Image 1 (cartoon, rainbow, N blue to C red):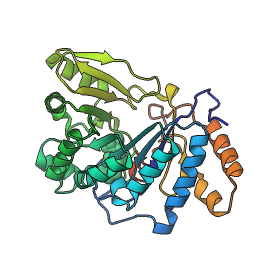
Image 2 (cartoon, rainbow, N blue to C red; image 1 turned 180 degrees about the vertical axis):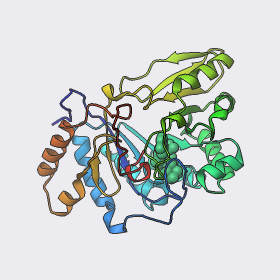
Image 3 (cartoon, rainbow, N blue to C red; image 1 turned 30 degrees about the vertical axis):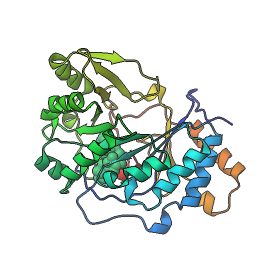
Image 4 (tube, rainbow, N blue to C red; image 1 turned 90 degrees about the horizontal axis):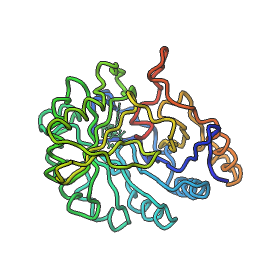
Length: 327
Ligand code: SAM
Ligand code: SF4
């Protein structure tokens, strides 16, 4: 069986959150409140994750991104990556806050990882530390440098722009891409923050980001796959580096969505903004056969929502926030 939904979209892309834990507390993601992590036995074990990966690959998943929480805080992630490679995942990547990346880069490469997304929301140390509520600016910058000098290059660096917080840094980030040759991606702030501070006024539209960079350094659009979330641009003057714009709020890309998500506690989510999620962990632990799991996953995917409703009146923010879903 190959995974399709009732709108004819083939599902080829799986984001796997391997932990709900994180060593950062980014203001647009986690709350500053004390820990509210799931118990360890609520999180899928490595054998459970292996089994699900094998089943998903048999259903036509070609692209897997490992995320969290912070994936590098879970012991064993390199071994998991090596096992996924051995299973034949065509496109395997990881999203990380970069805090532990420099020291782990070598092991990740040895495991077979070839693509990485690193979050960086400010080039100003004090502001970075205010946003992430850490003291990790120089550590993360060093990690980006290490990644960029390794076979992970060109690294993708993700900035979530929030009006009044870091939107004055668009040009500085673009210059950073030109100087380093990395792929700088700007993500619109989505209503998935634990503190529920999101409002439409805080969203910096991708069109504005494009316009601001374009007047300074003209941009040329680069072709992208239909299902890709980012619109991609290179610099017209031939400078290295690339710009990616991800506009889930102002230019939703749901029509071509090929993604589903597995949360760290084993729930299948067919959209970031799904109201419900679907309990694969319970089935695994009740002794379901592979056939049972395939049938269940197929039926859930078939009902994937047509699109998110952020822009519709009465939109309700999902109860699970980004750190628990896995971005
Ligand atoms: N901890 C890792 C990291 O920060 O890269 C991986 C998990 S994090 C949830 C994945 C991505 O989601 C990051 O790029 C982060 O910036 C993004 N993110 C988190 N909350 C967001 C929000 N409310 N709106 C848009 N993106 C968000
Ligand atoms: Fe942690 Fe990533 Fe969320 Fe920041 S964005 S709090 S690093 S999970």
